[in-house]
Length: 272
Image 1: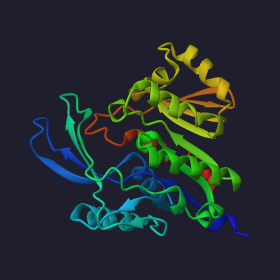
Image 2 (image 1 turned 90 degrees about the vertical axis):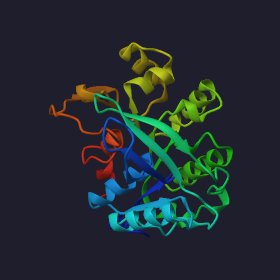
Image 3 (image 1 turned 180 degrees about the vertical axis):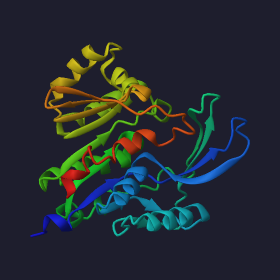
């Protein structure tokens, strides 16, 4: 039997290399490791939890950059697949005059090189305390099938399921397919992280309290909704808790929501 201290947080998702504008002219860029699930993998590792990543990595410069960054962050790549033909996703991130970020251009040269359901190692799930997923890859049929299989393995091994909605409608065939796909996972979700805008999108309701009432039918034990400068609204077993933020002058908000998922007051305590 695996001791609790030997368990890891298992994370499934695509690697991104972010080219983030260095100023508001959006003409010069700096390279960073990115992707919603990748940010979580690195974040929980920084907090001292064991972090293991399921993904596909190539052998080009961007892939090697990503591997070096992940290894520097202490993320375990035992369950990551290597495929020479794979090109990791790239995204150009522009900055608005208010220093907010705009995902200006996604580049995915090898969308069909995905982790297959049969590639999943059940031992990884036996050793896991948490499985973290997001909707960012689910628009692809293979990635959706792999996500479903990962959730099956997680539930069979009594693993806590964390879901980041991470809605990106432009990557989907339609908003309705995006919405229905995400909703199909909610009955199995133990922790849901979303933004106020994503709540409205999923529930088709702009009134927050009415939307939360609609979400309540899924009986999710923990819901964390980020609201920008207003902080986070956590709904724990039906009871609402508001957590404020310290006012700051933002420099770049890329990855800020992913960081919420890594907080000690979030779910990393389940792994320790």
